[in-house]
Structures are given as C-alpha cells and as structure tokens.
Image (cartoon, rainbow, N blue to C red; front, side, top):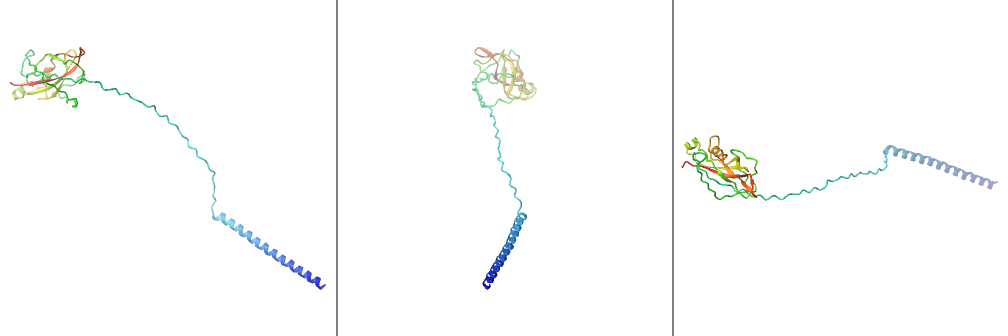
Length: 225
C-alpha cells in the first residue's frame, strides 16, 4: 500500500507541475499577443498611409510638319549697257537772236559709272533712262544762244553752266537738268541756260538705225568778251 500511495503522490506532483507549466505558457502567450497588437497599432498611428498609384505610361504624340518646297529663283545676268557719250557744245553767252552764229566744239569725253547721278538743281528729270544703248549720238541742228541776264552782266558774272538735256526721238528737247550751277534762282544764269537749251533741235540718236531718246551734256558758257 505504501508503494502504491507513493506512486499516486508522484503522479499528482507531476500533474501539478504540468498544470503550472501550461498556466505559465498561456500567460506568456497572452502577453505576447497583446504586445504584438500594440506594436501593429503603434505602427499604423506613427507612420502615414502610403498610397501607391498604378503606373501609367505617357505616350507623346508626334506631329509631322510639311516643309514648303524649295524655291529656286533664276537671276538674269545684267544686260550690257552702252554708256552715253556726252555731247559737249560750247555756247557764247552774248545776247543775240536765235539765228546768231554759234561755234560748236566737241572735246574729249569721259564717263564715270561709279559716281551717283548729279543732284537736280533746276529743271527736272524726264522719262528717258539715264543710260540708253545707242551707236549714233544726237547732232544739234538748231542752237539758240542764251540771253545774258542784265544783273549778271552788270555784276560782271562769267562762267559755264553744265546742262544735261533729254533729246527725244523726234529731236526735240524734253527735261533739262543743271549739273553745274553758276547762278541759280529766277533771272539767273542757270535759268537763262535752261531756257535757251529747251529751244534747241537735234538729229536724234540712233541704235541700229532706229531713233532713240537719250541724254546729252551741254556746257553753256557766259562771257562778257
């Protein structure tokens, strides 16, 4: 009996030990679960919520531009222009009628194409271009000498007025321009030279035997001798 009682006592002791161990395990498990829940709650409170947006691929649309066709402009070569050879005629400025004898002298002429056209002082430019191709120069057939203004004669003013005159196809004179002035203004030597040259008549210039309008240069001299 004593041995049986001892066994029973030991078994009870073992059962009590197992029971105490289970109680300890359950106690630790509850604490661990509680701590884990607290950690998860703390994480949600402290850290913000991160939203992840789905990736969208951006597609850029490319537009085509139509370029204008290449334009090629043909440049014509400049036409060869025959320079005008100015006709130089010396006129005495003494008073006289339209039939007075006039001495004509033709000297050396030169043309500088680099110089701009002279300023217009008296008269005006006509419709004829400054450079016209021609192979025959105009020839004066009626030359009217200028009238010497009384004021210029009394003042002893002498010199030469350089005139450019427009000679039409019929030989008449159109526009008259003063290239070199001697005495401008109404009643001056420039006006007297213009008035005289406008009454001149010419055999017109020709190109291939056809009359053409051109410009001629005329020096009109006023002398008291």
